[in-house]
Length: 172
Ligand SMILES: [Zn+2]
Image 1 (tube, rainbow, N blue to C red):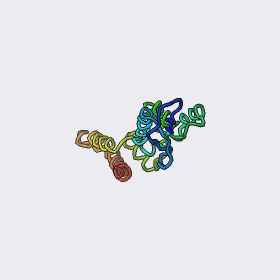
Image 2 (cartoon, helix red, strand yellow; image 1 turned 120 degrees about the horizontal axis):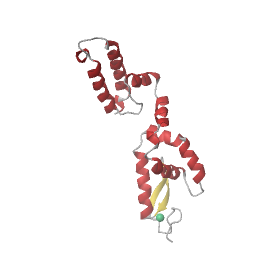
Image 3 (spheres, protein in one colour; image 1 turned 180 degrees about the vertical axis):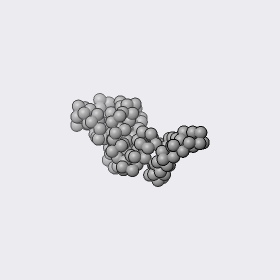
Image 4 (cartoon, rainbow, N blue to C red; image 1 turned 90 degrees about the horizontal axis):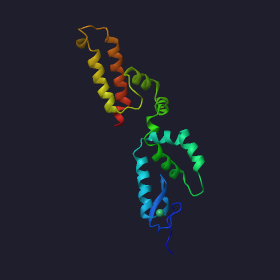
């Protein structure tokens, strides 16, 4: 007996295993070639996300409002997330609320460091390095007719940079 693809409203032969849960690959369902491709695309989408992004995505109101609307017995948790992920890929991590979420995940010192460096909370280490160079140039006495009026600011920026180097830079 051939097994039919587990995708909703599909009557093709299911020959490809699709894990049901991200951390439990022993449970799976069988899909046809067409649907395993879609499945894999979604799977990869999540694997590209940082832990923080996945966590935010799972917690976000957006996800759950849609989930309750579209949930049916044949759906599974990740399938719903994936569908929403594809829909919201372009918007959800650009939103102000995601930036706010990232802010709440930071320690006070990291938060202050980002503020001191005039950076958003979700920038990559490379951008922090770039911003540091920019700020040093901007506030260095050599660039301000020898004036030391920015000395304190420059100190703060350097301290902030050291702080972020310890916590963000080492995660690379
Ligand atoms: Zn199918």
